[in-house]
Image (tube, rainbow, N blue to C red):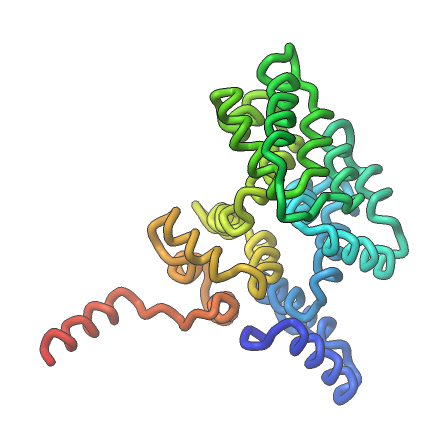
Length: 296
């Protein structure tokens, strides 16, 4: 699975059912456990179905996993949002927007519902004067206002193109003498802050955002397998090369070594395969290899 692309994995699952008469995902769920099971199951799903499954898990039952809602809804393109909304309806016979609206509240709900409309301008051009106007509107809604007008932030961050917003962030820093992320941190909190920060960071660099998510999933004791698997499955054929480069630049070690220090066995091997990496040699073996080269 780790050395095939998504189209090939879906074909494998289809052929498995034809030849064996059983559903491959059901078999994987029955035979595997833990992070390896989550990773294998995710790899055998189409991207829209995988997103829909994660959103459904985040919403159903007691409480809501807001982190998953933010990670999926706030980081996908218009076409990807439309695709996982259709997949959600097909898989669960329910409307995703209604489920999200019923499970969240306030400005956080408005942010997610706004993004689910998939109406973001996706043009590559930007208007510098419009960027200055939007930047000033954000200053008036935040830094210069008693309290914060979240609706103004919402309208601008949800609807403008990425190129336009990058220019707006530059103009905002000039007008407010402060980075937009610092303003968000001082003016907002909780799930709304997480949502807006995810949007801003993805606008600036999706690879940097997901690099940070991978780091947080493995730092300290234990592993957040859900986040690790979600990011690896959703980004392995999109921008994993850039994520690896960003990870090494930010954290001064390779993503492959970081994963190798945190997980083991077949789970580790599959993670490394998705990175396009061979298993890193242990430190002791590296020393011996170095000595051999010196002696040659």
